[in-house]
Length: 265
Image (cartoon, rainbow, N blue to C red; front, side):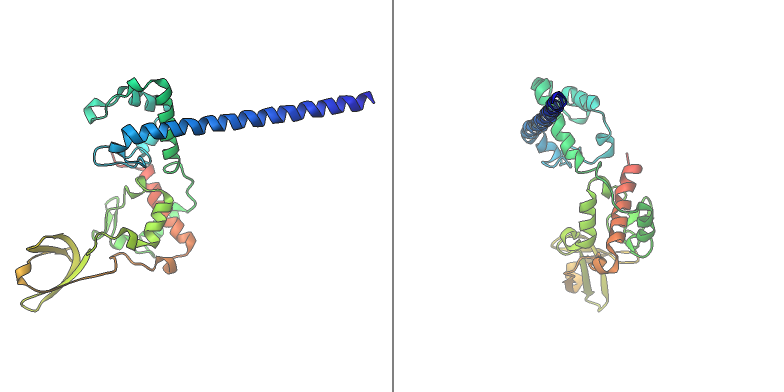
């Protein structure tokens, strides 16, 4: 009977310990959430005007959510920047906020960074490189670290400003990221000659096209008999059927990795 009582008491003690641990864990999680909520409010009011609400940069401030040289900073280094600022780069000091608000701000910045550079990358980046310069045909239009085409945007740093999910979406849904409303045009000059290419510059009086061979063509609109714009984006829209899901993941992983392993200064 005595042994039974001891076992019962031991069981009660263990249960109490588990309960207390769970309560402590829950309290810690609530504290983190509260800190991030306070940090979000501070970020929205004083940081977002320069760095954007998502932390990915604006006209006056850099990307602090996915930029490798920033996400790699320790908490102490980040807090020092928040306290002292970087006057020579236009970053003001915020020491007046106090330690509590700065700590909460750091917590929220880490939350923003957690959805970017520190995300797990599911695809095989090595296979992605092969696809980029091979089957997928990305290098026909896009340049990567000095190699590739020139009709599309240069992609060496694209993965530094976009998550893997965003890169994947850009591959599968290029219409969402078209170069512009009228990115590709076909024109006919008054002499009967036709030209096609990416619209590099255009105003009410002139147009500049770059054809697939890289040649730039300058036109006065007064000398053009017809102008038609391509509704579809220059980038192929069939990658969902051309590539398997694993291959799309691989290309996305390659774009993401190349920007973080060898970031541009």
